[in-house]
Image (cartoon, rainbow, N blue to C red):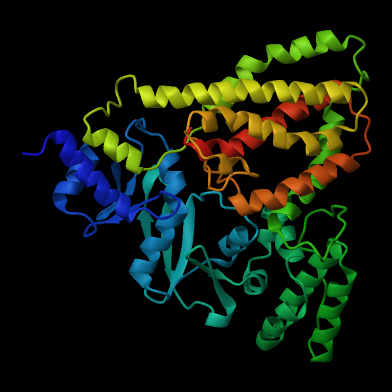
Length: 456
C-alpha cells in the first residue's frame, strides 16, 4: 500500500501536468479526480476561487496572503473566460489599453463584455471580481489577444475608451498614443463610425504630446470627409515630452515618461547637493551600514512553483513544510552569499563615482557584474545553470503581497537600456549620497527582477 507521502507525490504529478510554462495552474473541477483535489487542498497546494475552479498556492502561504492569487490572476482570467464564453468576449476598452501599455496591475473589478454574459458580478479572491456585461463586442478586426486575454485592438481601444481614461491614467494613455505608428490606424475606425467628437479628442491628445503631424492629419482627414471636428485636449495637464515615433516598446516609453513626469518633483524634494564627500572612506563605511537592512528586504521576495524536485522530495517522505527544510536553507544561504558578493561590486561602482566617473556610465557598465556576482554562488552549488547568468532573468517574477505585476523578461530587456540612457544624459550635478542611494536601489531593482530565477 502506498504511503501518505507517495500518494501526495502522485497528486503533485497530476498537478504538475496542468501547469503552464510559467508554473501556474488553474484547475477546473474535472481536471483532477476528487481524491487528488481533496489531497492537494488538505496539504495546501490548491485553493478554491469559485465553485469548480482552483489555483495552485504555496503550502506555507499564510491566511490572507494575496501572492498566489495575484500571480495567477491574468492566467485565471484567460482560462475561465475562454471556457465560459469561447472567443465571444472582450475586456473593456480602458482595461484593454492598460494591458497594451504594459500595465498588468490586478484590478479590483474587471469589466468583461460578451453577448452570452448575464450582467452579474462574479466574486473572486481577496476582494476582486468580474462584472460580465451582456452586450456586443467589437468585430474581429478590432480585437486582439494578449497572452490569451481578449482585448480591444490598440486603435479601437483609443477610439472607444472614455474621455476620463486620459485624465485617470495619463501615463498609460500617453504610452498607447506613442504606439500608434500611423494615424490611418485610427482614421479607418473614426471615419467608419463618424466619430467626430472622438477625432477631436485624439487630435488634442496627440498635440498635447507634441505630435503635431498626427493631430493635423486626423483633423484634416475628418474635415475632408465632411465632419465638423472641434479639437479638445483630454489630458488635465501638458507634460513636455520628446515624441519618438521610432519607439516601439511600451516599457521603454513608460520609463521615459516616468522620468520626465517625476524628475523635477524628485529634485525639488531632495536637499541641496553638498557635493562629493571629503572623506570617501567614511562615506563607504556608511554604505556598509545599510547592507543588513537592504539585504533583508530584497531576500524577502520569493517565488514558487511545483517542480520535479519537489515531487521527488515529497515522495521520499522528506518534505516537511513546518520544519527546517535543508534544501531550502541551502538555497537561502546561496542567495545571501550572492547578495553579499554583489554588494561588494556595488561599493566598487560607488567608489568610481566618488572618484569622478560619470554615474550613468558606471551604472550601465557595472550592473552586469552585480548580476553575475548575485547568482555565482547558486551556479557553483548547482542550484541554477551557468547559462542563467547571461543577461537578465528569463521568467516572470512577482512581488509578495502586491497587486503590481512586474514587467516580463522581454520588457526588462527593453526598459533597462532606456533607463541607463536617461541616467547617462542626466545634466544635474547630483551629490554622491544621491548616487549611492541610486546604486543601491538599482541593484535592488535588478535583484527583484531576477529573484525568481533560482526559485528564491
